[in-house]
Structure formats: C-alpha cells, structure tokens
Amino acid sequence: MPDLVVENLRARLGRVEILRNVSLEAWRSELVAIMGPNGAGKTTFLRVLARIVRKSGGRVELLGKDIYEYSRREYAKLVAYSSLERTPGFRMRVREVLETSLYPLALPRNEVLKRIEWVAKVLDIEHLLDRDLATLSSGEFQRVSLATCIARKPTLLLLDEPVAHLDPKHQLEVLHLVRDLSKELKIVTLMVLHDPKQALDFCDRAMLLRNGATIAHGEVSKVLTEELLSKTFDVKVRIVEVPNLGRLIHVSI
Ligand SMILES: Nc1ncnc2c1ncn2[C@@H]1O[C@H](COP(=O)(O)OP(=O)(O)OP(=O)(O)O)[C@@H](O)[C@H]1O
Ligand SMILES: [Mg+2]
Image: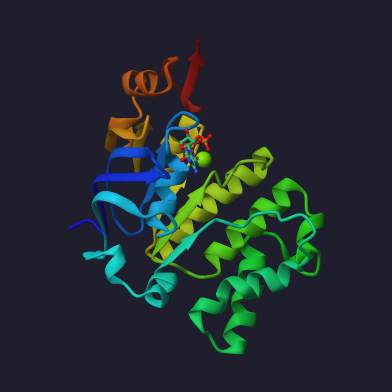
C-alpha cells in the first residue's frame, strides 16, 4: 500500500473550487514532481496536505490514516512544508528561525543544536546562521527555508519550488541533497518543479495538474512524455536522447 494516498481530492478557497479532482500515490524514499501551469493549484494542493487548507471532498491518507485523524502535535512531527515567508520589518536571526521550526518536535536542547549544526552544513548556510533573515539574498533565503524543513527529518516533505531563485550549481546541489535525504531518512517527498528535465532526472514519480485536476500521475517516464507535457502546458515539447548528455527537452509555442 502507498504511504501517501490522495484520491479525488477537492478543495475550495472561499467560494471558488480550486482543486476539483486530484489523485496521487507516493511511497517513502521516493521523490514526486508536482508540475502544472501557473494557477493550476499546485501550492493549494501542498497546503491541503499540510492541513493549512481544508479539503472539501476526497481521501487523503498518510501511513494508512486520514490526515485529520492525527492530532495537531502528531501531524506537526510527521510533515514539513516550506512555508517560510519574508515579512518586512520582522527581525530574526537564521539560527533562531531554525530553532523555531524545531519547537513542535520538543527535542532536548543538545539535539536541537546538533540538528542545526548538521542542517547548516548540508545546506551550505553555516556562514548565514547569525545573519538577520531579512538581509539574505533570494537564493540564501531559499536554502534557509529548505533547512527549516529538512532539520525536522519529516515523514512527508512538501517543497514548493525549492530551486526557484537558486543559481545552477545550488539548484543541482539541492536536488541531489533532497533525493539523497529522502532515501536515507525514508521520506515521502513532493516537490513542485517547473523544469521537466529536472523532474525526469531526479524524481521517481510525477503528477501533472491543470485547472485543479490531475491529468496524469505515476512513474516519471510514463507521465512526463511529449504528449502529456504538451497537453498540460499547452506548448510543443520534444524530448531527445543525446549520447553522453541524457535527455534534452525542447519547448516551443
Ligand atoms: N484566496 C483565494 N481565493 C480565490 N482564489 C484563490 C485564492 N488563493 C489562490 N487562488 C487561486 O487559486 C488558483 C490556484 O492557485 P495556486 O497558488 O495553488 O496555483 P499554483 O499552481 O501554485 O500556481 P504558481 O505556479 O503560479 O505558483 C489560482 O488561480 C489562484 O489565483
Ligand atoms: Mg504555486
């Protein structure tokens, strides 16, 4: 049985139905790419899984249990969602931000310090720990945001565009890191990505979303095809195997 099951999920924001029919299956240690055009409902979907937005229909089960059957405290220990935002005028050092993200786990003080040291090293933010969050560049901020999630060693990791704002090297480093940690810590990782090549290269599964409905979900090579990508994004897509370079994807309108 999959560790995460989403079936015919519906959700509304105010009076508007944003998610109409979303389905997905995912397993621990696997990376799932969530892809779709702007406004398709990707962020809303992650927010339903994080229990920030309530579903209005369908089934969402984590480890065989409806996500609302977990207490708030239990769920906070299981799930990490990259929701860090820049609030103008709000001053906090990176180290304090990381400590705050660990509160729900109620860890002993020495374990908190160990986790911060560990996550700062793997995300290359050791030099930023004493900086004010508001002073970071977009890419530095993005890595701190990811660190707040990873430090919690969750069972379900929800990453909304984790490589946005990152330079090419940091994009690849973050993708490698998320893939390795998902395997090592047996995490179900859902990651919103916009680049189909990154999804094909790094993810095990994919889900295509358009107008709040799942177009396809399953094994990445069966979902991220020329035909399904073209249909989802309303563009022309060519996928070409190039010796020594792997798959290259050409997109045109
Ligand atoms: N509070 C709200 N009330 C009504 N509609 C909303 C509200 N919040 C978001 N929406 C709409 O819901 C739709 C889905 O938004 P969502 O942020 O989930 O899309 P997305 O797929 O993450 O897009 P992007 O790629 O641009 O981040 C959009 O059309 C958005 O305008
Ligand atoms: Mg979004």
